Amino acid sequence: MHVSSPLNSGPSGLSAPSHWPLWLACAAVVLWAAWGGLFNPSQLNDSWEQLVWAQQLEWGYWKHPPLTTWLMAALQRPLGPSAWWPYVLGGACSVVTLCFTWQLGLRLLPASAMAWVPLLYTLNNGFTRRAQVFNHNSVLVMLIAAVAWRLAVALASGRLRDWLVVGVLAGLSLLTKYQALLPLGLLALLAMYGFWRADGLFETARVVRNWPGLIAASVVALIVTMPHLLWLWQSDFMPMRYASHALGAHESSPWKDAVALFVLQLRNWIPGLLVLAGVVAWHRWRVGPTTGGLRLANPWWAAWIGGPALALLALAAMGVNLQSHWGMQSLQFVVLLLAAWAATRWGAPRTSAWLGWVLLQAVGLALIALQMTGRLDTHR
Image 1 (cartoon, helix red, strand yellow):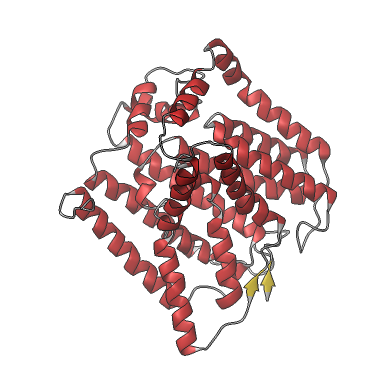
Image 2: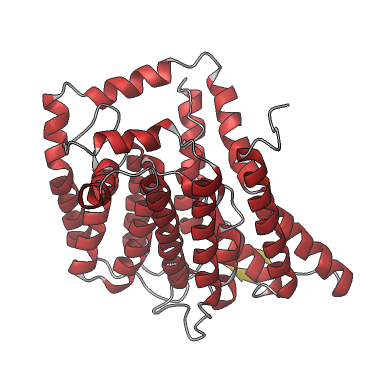
């Protein structure tokens, strides 16, 4: 059986999935963020920066666009400064990202794959161990998940208001980090491909061609970002100069940085891959070899995973020193690919997969507590 991520006319077609895996995973993410607050008093510099920058609202800051700082200000101004706010906002971004990814999955995956989405999401260290971190990457991943979900809705409905929502979200993502240009560009190409091949993008629904909608979304995104663009001009493109300096400060080769980026993403997936390997072994032992596979020649996988990966490699070929954290957003939708693959082979996750999930959550939380209290030295 081959599943190529069909766009459903409604959430998960005729068979609606149970939502308890989503709520369980959301609770797990909240626990990870709170765990960081309890055992890790030292945040990343760019998390603490938001506490400082939020004291003055601007249309831009010397390193990045303003939206992340505005979110900190929205919490800090009425309630006062607190060292807990980065943990609260970081956890909130991770939970909302999961919910947006779930909504996207409801539009694109079969019902049997949906329980795999929260299970695998919370087996990626980037979404669990780093749930305590609040920075521009946290907000960007959340907003790109929202853009992808609402784009799927707009492509299916063709309604102008859905395209306007896409434009607002796209503009907000550009107010978060300039890296948003890459996924937004790929999603725009996906939409244009869908307009060209109305019956070739999805299996169970035709794309409703709406060129005025796509143009309106682009105009709205430009309007949302226009004040920041004016600030950029007035500040002599300060964040651009910071980015240029940061990229030029690396002494390693671009290809070494590229390898490090992909290795980091693979390391983040170790817990998830362990569970999938365990399910494979269990099925071989109890059932025998499993047939079924996933057709990778699908425009959605190209826009979500293949395009970003190739773009990163192209940047390395151009001599750009890649930042390791770029991979988090660029490959954030791998979770949907793995969920679709698992569903084609085994259907929904069984008790054994969830038992593995519980075990790895407990081990991960114990390890981070030991590391942050100095009882486990990982640098030896």
